[in-house]
Length: 211
Image (cartoon, rainbow, N blue to C red):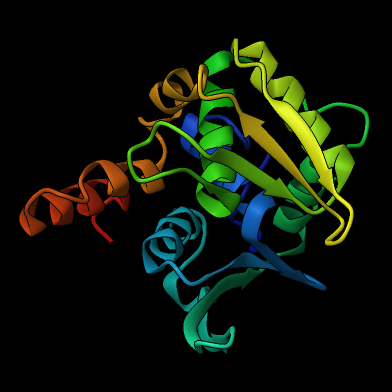
């Protein structure tokens, strides 16, 4: 149950809030009154933990580990029991008519979260840029958001897996990476992949707000 001292009436209000919304829409965990994130990337888990730490005392936040896939990757699930917060997130994700975001920067931050959770791109950041979705409505809503910031993606359905994929044209890929890179942890990791470990550690520290 939610804490009586915690108010969510102003959420989302910042670009970081919208990033968290996008990340949760991609890799969110929820069960009855619990809400959290499930991912194998510990940096993203720490990012979500930082968000929860701003709302709840440390003892409310739970972290579990699990094994996933044939290679038995270590996965992490971080969550908190809070029905009011879960309702806000689900209302945003399950709105089948529109996904209303009030300004361009908030859209960029939200899309960065979706990309970090379910997106990919080539290592040279020039091709194969896409975001995967489990349903068509969700993909169409985000297609509309991308168009609002001047990016014209293509939406495809893969019948065998019943998944939907937003593809960013190679002509739009640079623009796409430029607009989401201030918010995207995944892009920051790719850009710094060939630099010194100390540089990478510093960007991780900044991205996760010292967690």
